[in-house]
Length: 316
Ligand code: NAD
Ligand code: UDP
Image (cartoon, rainbow, N blue to C red; front, top):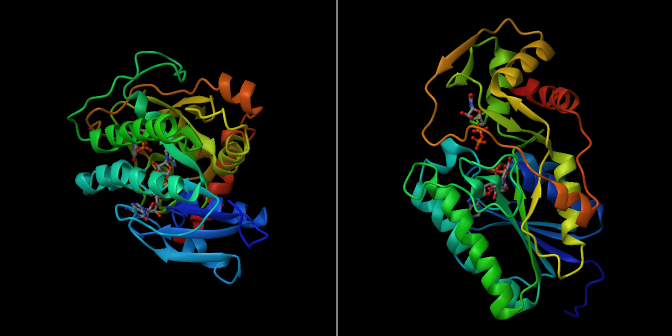
């Protein structure tokens, strides 16, 4: 779309959250004008405090389950709580955020001719019986469980993205993000990396859910944001869905032991019940990201955890 601005204008929904705040900063560094729209359910002004003085940065308190009227060239749709305790707090609102939010943002993209990125998730694979998970795998998702508001909401959002692409020729970019960690995560976020680090720094017991043999693959946030840009800058025919994550796979016991060692903590491990439908294994197959986007993560887990521990010290 022709406009009177020199800079590209970019909308980031969920821009005050963990990933969104890193993305807003990286976009400003790319000389974009950034509009951050967030309802501050899990996001924090503190995450974007250092951006507020930048004349190219604008914040809107807005819930994306309602339409938004702004003129932009690109949209990154990140709004949605990502931590299980947070997305299960108000599951109906979680589904609304994914589904109505996608409809509203896709409608906006269609109206203004913007390219639109969707922060989808490895949760679309559910508790997978294919390992590692390639994009061609359709998943194994419980439609009526406690995680379903998130998993099925994100799956329906993907459906909407591809229907707007086929029906209305909207330019879409769908990334399936695997577990990502780093600074700006909320100290009470409830996800495993923030829980373990805060517990280790405070000398509290480390809460292992289940027997701790379940696995996840952890990507450092700066690697992930580089992947967002590779996908967004790729030719229009590259729609995704495309996996973005770090293939290094660890059990929760290994993660806990690593964090205890890195922090020099005296914390002991305690075992608590496994939440329902908790996936047993998760590891991205990133062949497509490597071949199509020339992207791969670089940050080793221990080094990424060291940066993250330094960030969390202020809250311990
Ligand atoms: P986060 O909870 O830190 O950020 C989500 C942001 O969205 C918050 O700022 C929150 O206030 C905002 N938000 C929630 N509902 C909203 C609504 N209705 N309207 C406007 N804003 C709303 O989570 P995150 O880790 O930064 O995740 C960002 C996106 O990436 C999410 O869509 C999530 O599903 C996806 N994702 C993240 C991960 C990960 O490991 N971090 C993995 C897979 C997918
Ligand atoms: N987990 C844990 N202790 C915690 C928090 C989480 O053992 O204090 C486990 C959880 O059961 C899951 C894994 O860590 O198996 C990752 O959980 P998280 O909530 O970070 O993300 P997700 O399950 O969505 O991948």
